[in-house]
Length: 92
Image 1: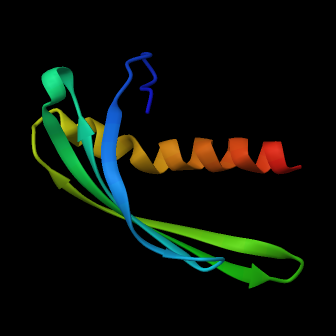
Image 2: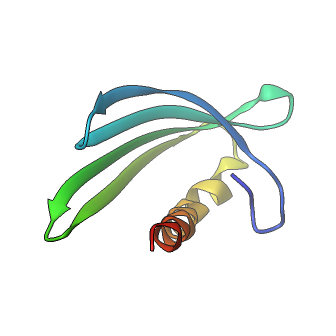
């Protein structure tokens, strides 16, 4: 992830569920300097046929582990919006 100021934030995690064409569940931790855990992020992505396309829904829950994570958590919805907008552009 990259902040608006250009700072990179790395994540470590794993897929805990993969149901082809239907659902992804990802359990990850955002890490900072010296591999310090900043927050835990639990993400569920569902896919559903919707007319001639696919509807994708992303739900996240957060567990802050460091005070600096608050800003990241607040910016996550905008980050997802930008990511999905770029995906839509690439698929068009």
